[in-house]
Image (cartoon, rainbow over all chains, first blue to last red):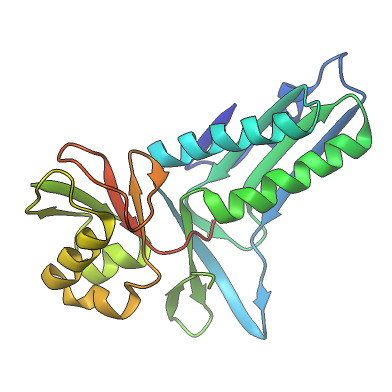
Length: 136
Length: 80
């Protein structure tokens, strides 16, 4: 299950959605809005997405993960819009028969999401300036 | 005409979320980048880093684009 949402992420419901008796391990990753980045203070983040391509890339990501680990179920939600400090920007829940597979699959999914899924964040710094974050 | 969508800083620089570019079927991604910087000179400083997506996937500079393809232009992604 993939979703982009403008509203707060219900990570409990997301986690429940991947649980089953086939799995002995469930890993949940939450990305949250951090205050300090290299000495600068963030007051909020704005997220923007390209929904139709994001869904295509998330589906591709799931199939790549399934080719490497015996994933039972996976669910990913990314928030868009204005987020305050501490809010959850992304949640990934994955279930596997065993814990090592679940941890590895979860790490792969967030690492790859950050480089391949078309979503962008804009920093709102405490000095009133804003800046798109574009990793080099 | 080719209908090109912009996102994030590319949209801010262009000042619009879409642009219509005169197009002949089979022209390449590289040719699109040249056409975009001619029409929107503000993109020039970032063009080497801009990505072009065709039909919801990343496209290399030598890929061909047809009128009617879903085309978008944006900087490297920064979600998560």
